Length: 243
Image (cartoon, rainbow, N blue to C red; front, side):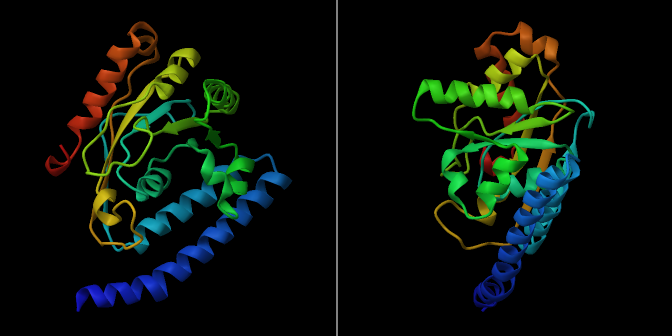
């Protein structure tokens, strides 16, 4: 009976509100960015939209901050990728002006793709090395005025709940730009919406924002050591069932 009630909630309440909020947010971002250079329009409407999306799942949300980050400083945020709601959890509750490195395919989503492009998010084309390098150059040009970039170094959502191996892109950007890295552990979105399904399961979600890895360390450490260090930090914040 409980599953039936929540299915009806998702169909008649969650879905209509989420779709309308998504369209309204995308239009607000597009118009705001076109008529004003104020960074408010790039970051705040999506932040409110993301919080709404998380709350609509009826999940309990917890944010754990283990270090202090400066809202005026640029960082490379690196997070594990559990599910679709990772984006909403980070966007809504990180509290930083962030741009995403996201798959090229997302550009095709009505309203969202165009709004993301106008807001300066970076689309990644994995078809060739040259395309990847162009994405990195794009990231460099967008990280101004305290803007940061958020990347899922696993490259795709986990299919098991366990963390997969990392790719180098995020660490190349951090090294080339001399930026500190902030590891983020995401817990819960895997259970809220499993991959290849659109059914939502009310659960718990937690965002763990770890202490930063200073720019000096990022520049000094080898790529492999830096990747291993970051992966170890993120792993340490995972709930036991995801380890």
